[in-house]
Each structure stands twice: as C-alpha cells, then as structure tokens.
Amino acid sequence: MECKDSKCPIHGHVKTRGMQFDGIVVSDKAKRTVIVKVDYTKYIYKYERYLRKRSRIPAHNPECINAKTGDTVTIGETRRLSKTKSFAVIGMAK
Image (cartoon, rainbow, N blue to C red; front, side, top):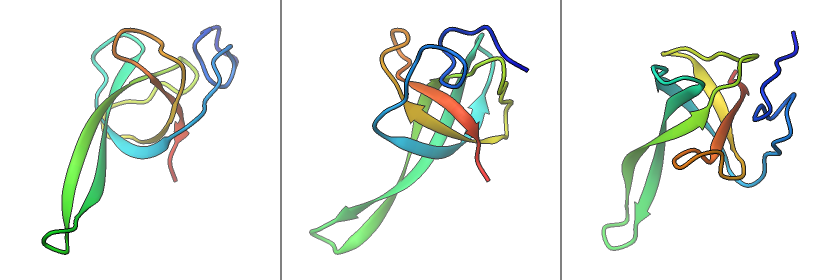
C-alpha cells in the first residue's frame, strides 16, 4: 500500500538524516502527528553516576505506518516539517 503523503520518509520527498531514536507513542490525538517518549541516561561527572531522563518528541505519522498509542516506533530526524515537528516515524521498532 503506497501512501500519497508528501512528508512520508518512505514514499514522499522527505529524507531522514542525523539522529534516530526508538520510543513509545504516548499520544496520537493530532492529525498525522504522534508524541514519542524517549528514555535516555546522562552521566553526571561530579557524582560519577547516571541520571535517567526522558523526552517527548513530536513526530510526523505517515498514513502508511499509522502508529497508535502504545506502539514502539523508530523516529528519524528530518528537515523542519512544521513549527514543532523535525522528526518522522520511519517504522515500527523490533
């Protein structure tokens, strides 16, 4: 099934470059947009410990992938797609 979405990184004219993350979709309420929660760790040199952090990243959700809340997805960095979106869903994570 081919989608007609021009912002789709697979079938459209948008290329992915830069960072890629695996995360969990926490919201799919907006049209063609999902909010992906990414967990990561940051090293604190002073205390020689790691700090657990999380980020909520808005990403474009193409019609061909159509991720829903609770899905684990891979997102990739793209050019600026809107005021808040600079990532697109590439596929479902394993």
